[in-house]
Length: 261
Image 1 (cartoon, rainbow, N blue to C red):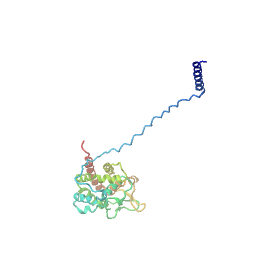
Image 2: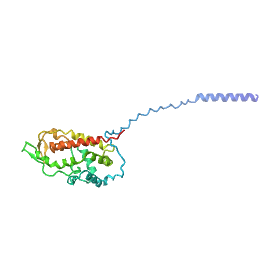
Image 3: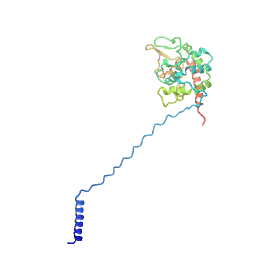
Image 4: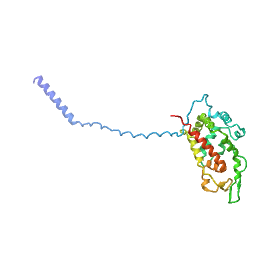
């Protein structure tokens, strides 16, 4: 045979072998495409609390003191507001800003930490009329709170709010330190004023009971009210009305402080 025939036979044989091997081997399937499930929609981030009563803040000419060393500055500001030094002595100047903030925050609650209030406690004895199961708050008891009412009334509301706005960053820091990192203290202040203004006006002196050491209101509905409202009910109708008048005046000044558009 010629070489050409041999090469033809060899080529044909190799082709047949290739076909046999191709069909004899198992076919490999392409890897299935794995479709990733769509990403779950992320819940929207919680909205920042909306400020209801913003204050128009201005950069002070001089830097404000640090909160922890602000007592002397607060005392000077109070001296400018109250000329009667005997009334100033009713205030406790230590940690004054923090005392104000924690007391405001606690007034609508059931308990008020008396050791943290910014005022000295009234002197004298709580006066009660009647005996046994027919006891009531004596009308003369209101005299114990006369100086505190006078202190509230002698302070000019506009000047007080102007000082408060000037030093507001200190109050805001104290409020955040209290456990409200996203809270706005001025909103809480207005809310508490509204709560105190909602204190019911009592007619006759309320009845009292004394199950243990302290006197309680005999009416469960009165006793269930907040610490702040019970203070207003305890100081007497006339004193309460005068304090409410000052609170209304302060609320008007506070809510007028919103920055102009």
